[in-house]
Image 1 (cartoon, rainbow, N blue to C red):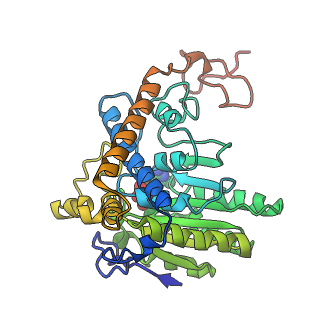
Image 2 (image 1 turned 135 degrees about the vertical axis):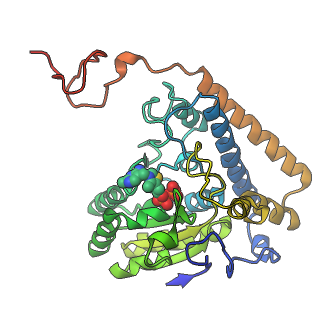
Image 3 (image 1 turned 30 degrees about the vertical axis):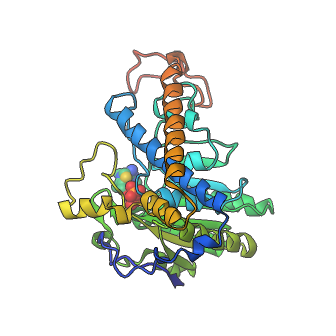
Length: 367
Ligand SMILES: Cc1ncc(C[n+]2csc(CCOP(=O)(O)OP(=O)(O)O)c2C)c(N)n1
């Protein structure tokens, strides 16, 4: 069981981390510069996409619950770089970056956020329910832990069909205290299912810290009750996440058995767009937004220092990302609202009249 980075208990302090040293850019020197720039571009895209989402939400263009990947960009890009296109992905409601990274068109992801007809789920799912069978992003779940047994089910199907695909199941730290999490890990190991459970430890489930809620705050060890090997990685470091995830995904594929990866990073803002995070002290807020904890800034600076990214190149990437995000927002803005008559389509197996005056408990079908 590896411990490659070490947050102190459940607090937002991350001292003692054995992260790849930022002064040492030798790791970067061995990488293909185009790949590195691609990671940087993708991380910055998620950052700007989420900022735009937050803005659109405050302008009431987006409704419902809305959770952002701000501060988790390196984890999202690192994890998705470890998957093959045919591998499956399940996530919690903090899913926008994952949907884009798994291959969904950002324009259609934004349209989904706006609740419009061209959205990936025709505007009916919204922020928490990005879903697309083509790219094998199988959701986007609002119930904490809801995705965990489903991911095991998909892994059972994969193994039953003797395919060599792997299922990745993303979740937050709070999810590890949901009953279904324990049941699923048990059966996943018992039945040797090719699934990698990934816990994004941002130190809090809403406002409850890990050490307030987990008897074993070293979350990657929690699979040991089921003999599932775990690793912990610094989720601010895109290369470290990619390497750890690749290692476990490939082992799951080869050995046909589950693994557990914990990636820790800071949630830059509140739990959701509307949460002012009053439960955090000013010091904790500053720490969560500090430049040295910002995965996008860290990586950009590393690339600049290693001579991979010039100031000019940085500006160019920033401009093209800005343009693509604006395009996504324009696309969403111009997409029509779904027609009210389609409200119950795909909801029930049998036709249900869209009777807006029908009250709860009124019979669905008239005699
Ligand atoms: C079964 C269930 N209980 C409670 C909630 C309310 N709730 C929504 S998000 C959340 C916190 C989950 O935290 P975590 O798993 O750490 O994920 P994060 O938000 O940090 O990504 C809670 C309790 C819910 N959606 N589902």
